[in-house]
Image (tube, rainbow, N blue to C red; front, side, top):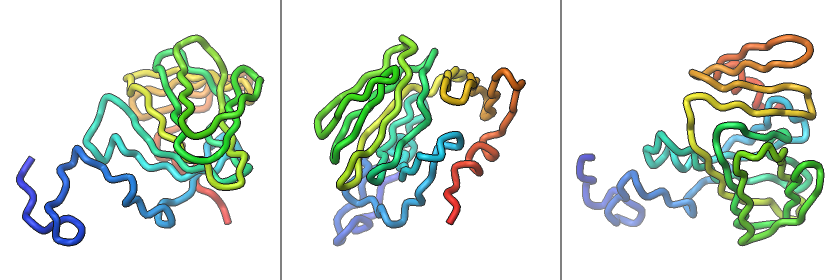
Length: 181
């Protein structure tokens, strides 16, 4: 990586290398709220910290959920492990249909054991958490609330259900995450 010019950072300080992401400098009002494409109760602001640091093998995200909203659709993984670490706020982690209160300092790990999980912000303020998981070439996620199993592969998603197969590109998936209004 080329050297940073002196004074490129805040207040004339040297600029940080790409390896350092200052989460305290995130402009949250500038982060567009999105939702999971198949969960109408979902609303979140997602900042891809790993991408900002140049990581390609591990997806690391900082996520903010307003009170009363959810993160992703209830799902379970079959390939990649994942974790959630609560930084701020009060939440409810639902594991196989059973709600568990979570708050700052709580770590929730998701080994490959098919436990269906989802997260909701309980308020009064936003729920802020760090999450990460491997970026495997293929991932399979079961989404029992909509009766679908999704295969993520090569930038495409194939959703298998009793009603057949729906195929989406990454762009089509992302277009469904846009909040209306």
